[in-house]
Length: 329
Image (cartoon, helix red, strand yellow):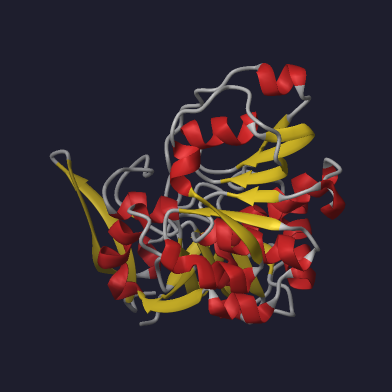
């Protein structure tokens, strides 16, 4: 096909990285089996890094966007037929494979999850990789036996995408949620999502003692570094901390004391390469557990043309909740 369509592409020339709208044809797309007409993508922290040239892309040119939702145009010799609504999260999109900031894309059928019938397409990208990651964290807490009656659950980076969805989910499941944020102006928003108390980001980001007073029955951490070290040192005996992000840094300046003296469990949560079965489980639970009114409150929709302005904002922590990218605007 020679008809042109829009995409947001990262390029590199003489060591200089650029990101901008361009036009492609189907002949330009990767050699994958399923052709999709994309309706929406989402803006995630990784997307912001890519837009800012801080690089998750392993090679260039690279179409950005680590997630997408749309309708199958051509399923090839797969289980997918024209018109099927499908979602892709992760699997190296925008890193090693072309991603969702495009009006069309070819993808591997093994990456696809059928869109839950209870969601509209826009809602699935309001959830996106951030919300799906939050669900994986909540599943991990529950599977490790953390119950609402065990005590407070801390969510760091609370006003971001993962944090917002995690608070909503945990609150709906009966947990008492404490939100950690550096933006006091987001308190009303976070209270609406279900937070019952707040702790300043600064209290957790400054170096603390390796063994502190017990407080948290569990936690969802999106920040890493000193924040995660303090969370671990404040977690109750037998508590569970899920780690899914590194917005503050990739290091972990912690000691073994919480693990060997309080039996604290640190659970890594990877959303990129999770199995298809685990993904389907997460999306099924999102369909049943996520409050749609709260999802709408945390969501804004922006055109693909706004990505150059949105990328720096999410990296700088200036985005509240979730941003859906309408690739057809």
